[in-house]
Image 1 (tube, rainbow, N blue to C red):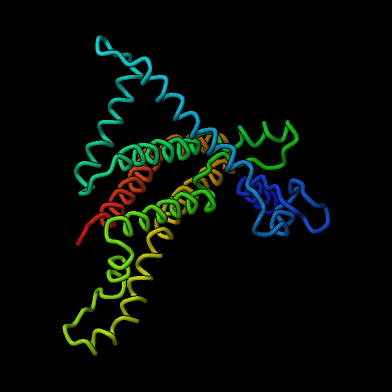
Image 2 (spheres, rainbow, N blue to C red):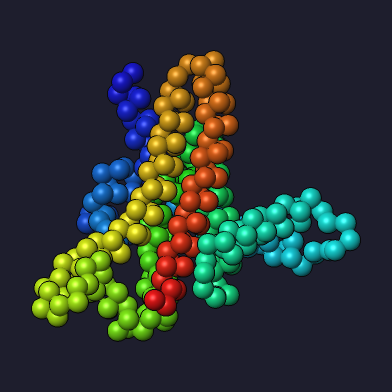
Length: 277
């Protein structure tokens, strides 16, 4: 039982991987070991596929609502979309202190996209993997935010935007000075030169920690939630329902909160990068 349980957990936590295997060439991995042997440039097809599909779903739904928007008697979907847009817009106005036409659409995209990816965690853990096996696919993870490649990819994209806004608002010299002259900036020129390497190390670590913590926070919370669902699935059927339903209800709060935190931290980081001083 322990062996079968271990295999069950490993199977549900393994991605459908496509890459260049040393022996088999470009192919899908049939085991977790083969996936590891494919190295860094292997693709997690399931994470990429589901994240792209959910991103397209978000764009298509919001576009359809925008095209059919009416000021008379709005539909339920239009009310829901307007509520989300107003919620995100209010948070951007309260948090972002600069001026940019990009921040609000970016925040809306991040919140809705991550929420949809997290929402996949509420699908029964065996449903899609079993269906995928019937179609000849060995593995199928359906929650893209439990893959660190996806979460870190999003956080690194935010990091590049932070660098862009920092240089745009302060200039290259201003941004370099911000890293070299903080937090220690004595008036004495000799001491100032002495503290520049220390400041660069401290500020460099702080800067790099932003995308790492942003991506790993989302990954860690969603991975833990998925793992609990998998462990519950190993229990007898009656116990599964007793535990899975309360956990799923609680998890609705988790998936919403994680999307909100990622969005808010993105706004805060970009607001800090846009400050002229």
